[in-house]
Image 1 (tube, rainbow, N blue to C red):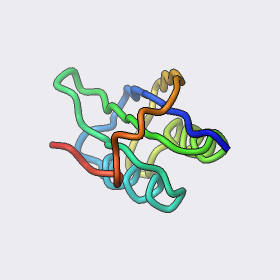
Image 2: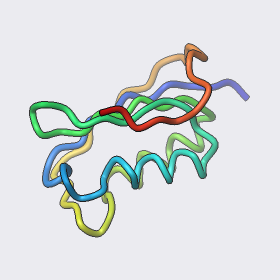
Image 3: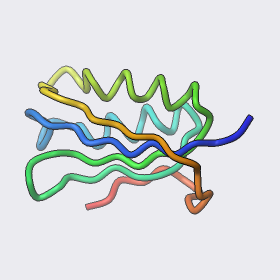
Image 4: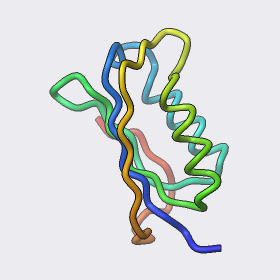
Length: 92
């Protein structure tokens, strides 16, 4: 099974609500690698690599987020994986 890369951006009430920790926990549980970070514009960015089915599952979770968040929109694009990540990290 070939790996894919998903780049996603979530907007809404996604800063200061544990969103990055939520994404990191979910991605690691799915065996994905990559990172999650807050962006200066108030959105959250995710870059994740792994099997398509695992990325589909993560994408579904990104659209809802943790209970303390309020996601107004989630935009995701897929491309081929680069294999550059060993783990899934939270970036500051």
